[in-house]
Length: 500
Image 1 (tube, rainbow, N blue to C red):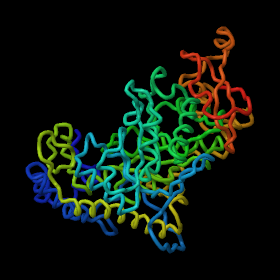
Image 2 (image 1 turned 180 degrees about the horizontal axis):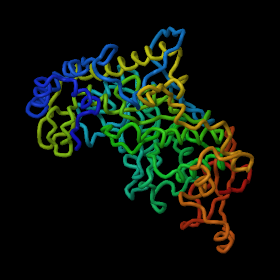
Image 3 (image 1 turned 90 degrees about the vertical axis):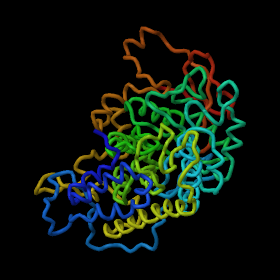
Image 4 (image 1 turned 60 degrees about the vertical axis):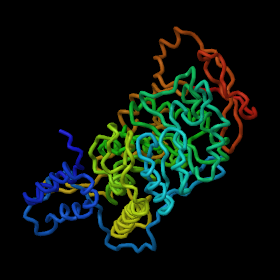
């Protein structure tokens, strides 16, 4: 049964005195607003349970994880860790992002006061604030904090009267100084309609990314990929190789919603590690930064995500707690007791804006300060140095291993070598799905016997941008529309066939 209480709190309640547990539950049910005010003290009482050396409770038999200490610790001057995003030749405005950012906050689900507080904290703390899918609201703009504009399959906020992508409306918003990156949302069950979307297959997506990059004035453009079938992901990577065009970043989303309620393991090795390994195995990792959407609640959560291959992470859960969310889970009912969610027909509550801005900013700052302490203990200088071997874990009551023991180490170029028959496949998922992935379709390729029976395809000319900013003419298969809508986007210099 889902209670709405974080798993860490549920586990900790075992060590709470009976009277304190009863009081906690009573406050949670009858005095939610008072509980928001008492939340810091509540966490302190819960977290004060004995768990260190000399505890009467046994350590967990397996699964417990921690950061490995170095013999010689390091000394770091600050905690403002940054990552540079934007390596494409046409990316004229790369962005130095914080390694810990705020996941999307939608104006359709959060109250205006909540978005104002989150935006003010983003400006004060120097981290990016996602807009969610849709237009950039007035509340997002008030404080002038850095924004990641997220565009969904419906192109809400940048479409014309017929629902088609409108480059003029897009450019009007994307060129604003406050918008630092553009993120295209994809999902296994949300592929665009080839008849009305801006792209219908992987190659068109690469062309669309380049188009947005130019319309925005050279800002980083990336993909938010919801972990699904590996074959669709492999199709995207093949399109990158064939067009020599790549997104500036890829955000891995383990199918979690905007409130950060998905467990971390769904955004773990099954999704994030696959993206990292594929880019390493195809020689694209140095050109593409990887972000991960995960319910971060501590500095160790960030360290673990970095160990799995991410360059930065975005979260909503911790920020929402700092804002005042008490997980009543009636957001859709329009009766949020703390005013975090939108209230239908009621005046919003929790309007103490300066206090909430400070609380959210303080959560971000203290989390990164704790990350700094972890890095110093491990003898590292930046989160990008964290590797799976740095994460230790119990693998039995009397045995300790590392996260590296559970992961496959894919050498650079290993996937391409296996494709040429020069080595084994790094993993069974590559052997099964990579040969079937197509650059010109999200659907799997037909067996050779079926392809021969259908006859040769008739390609039409399409234009892409190659490495070193050199335009290239590629061959695109004929689709239902008969022509490629991106022809003429850039000049034509070289003809090169498009394989699968």
